[in-house]
Image 1 (cartoon, rainbow, N blue to C red):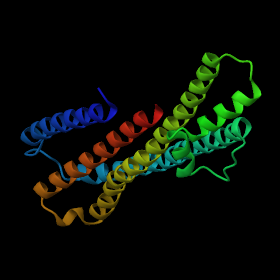
Image 2: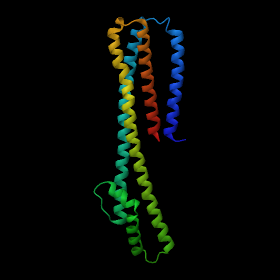
Image 3: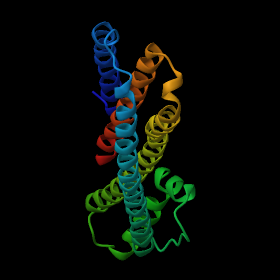
Image 4: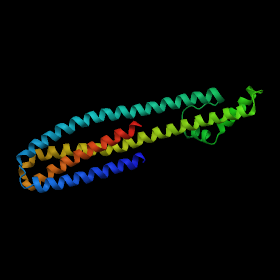
Length: 214
């Protein structure tokens, strides 16, 4: 099962569980809900989500920088390796480098140089050396692409997660000042919504962290 499918099932299961819990809470807690507890809940959400948001922001920035540094290191080491084995010079990593690897032009150049340097080497050994060279370069491109995709996916998910984390803070700040103007039923719904948004934000952060670890 792929990571995306696994994440989708986790989200679906989470939504189902939260929905069932919310319905049960509505049937049991709504009639006896004390509006005075709302102020305490809003204050707790503001403090908790603010602390979580600051920590999550620092962790995510560190994680993305780590992945970008990994890719930069991979790019530089590969360009140096290409120069040492074929003499080809690329000023920086680009789509041209990936195209030259995929169409095997670098490998053909390397094979030509290898035959000139090792005239007495058996043909089978030269071919194996050429194939190993191509395999190593292709694995590098795959790893580079996978890391870049992880960075982009992490950024997209983090934006969504931060929206779910910031929303409870903003809603709680607004309702904390005007909660007395709403009836009990409206207070109940707003408290439940704030808690639900916070739960979704935490879930998305967890999924983002788990997916970016591989």
